[in-house]
Length: 170
Image (cartoon, one colour):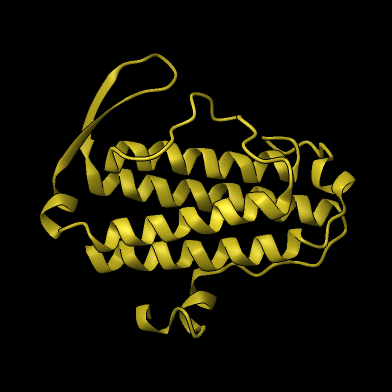
């Protein structure tokens, strides 16, 4: 199970890098333009991904900043947001690397943001949600790039597995 989540953590880092590389070609107005995506703009979408990852990592690890709202804008500048994203991706990889198979098969508890309830659930399904959520919103980022007339950014897992970074997971 751990190898499976290590693959998704490495894929997440790879895919985020590709989205950020493509977003780097946007000017400030394009980066901030509300194009009708769930979080409006590329800025809103990429911030949401970072916020949600921080919320879940705080739940998983008990450490780090956990914003109280999933639509919080942490950084308005793409360059600063990218540095935070890269640090968070490394944090995710390191946390999973240090997590035992026993812990992955176990349970954890956390407080919801929406109604402040305590939830107890198995860790592995929550991690599956965590990585699926990232993929979902990277799809929104991809759509934003398309709306703004930018080239397609291939993000397929199998493409990652064929890459230098992903061969260990294929």
